Amino acid sequence: SQTIHQWPATLVQPVGSPLSLECTVEGTSNPNLYWYRQAAGRGLQLLFYSVGIGQISSEVPQNLSASRPQDRQFILSSKKLLLSDSGFYLCAWSVSYADTQYFGPGTRLTVL
Amino acid sequence: AQSVTQLDSQVPVFEEAPVELRCNYSSSVSVYLFWYVQYPNQGLQLLLKYLSGSTLVKGINGFEAEFNKSQTSFHLRKPSVHISDTAEYFCAVSDRNDYKLSFGAGTTVTVRA
Image (cartoon, rainbow over all chains, first blue to last red):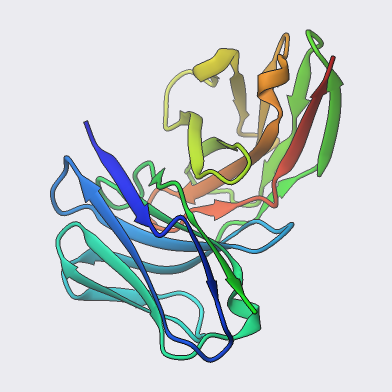
């Protein structure tokens, strides 16, 4: 069966520091991968999605970037964090385009 | 892109009572519909989905939802809730030709004894 992992589970970072969140999927090949952010009291906002290695599409221009160095690895990064980057970050995968998305456990990021 | 409206932000309910969470979406084209549940500090878990076929969809934990194309709705129901159903519930919609999943703002269900 397929599983999705995210780490770290929680992170507290100062403003201006870099960020790296990792997501990996097991049990499937060439998944579509997604990064979402969930701010307090709000719904989910799609940040990035990827249909293959090195292929990244950005949904919202902002302080973050994403990379997919391996088939089942998806990384969310920032060079300098802002207070507004605080939130709950969720990674998801799907078998194919427009298919059901399955979510990881999330990373709680607090920027101080 | 789709627009999804969850009509109730908070739903308090007593244990063993029924609950209905309402969801409406904007598109007139063919869609896929989903309900997810999120327990505190956890990721989203798929409750059920509608892709095609029967408009009444049964999911995990005793939940079901009905797709109504004419009313562009996909309401979630459970005939008898438990304390453990306390969580946030998200409705999501995607066009059949699009990768993008649009989420509603969520409905927080609080089950009281």
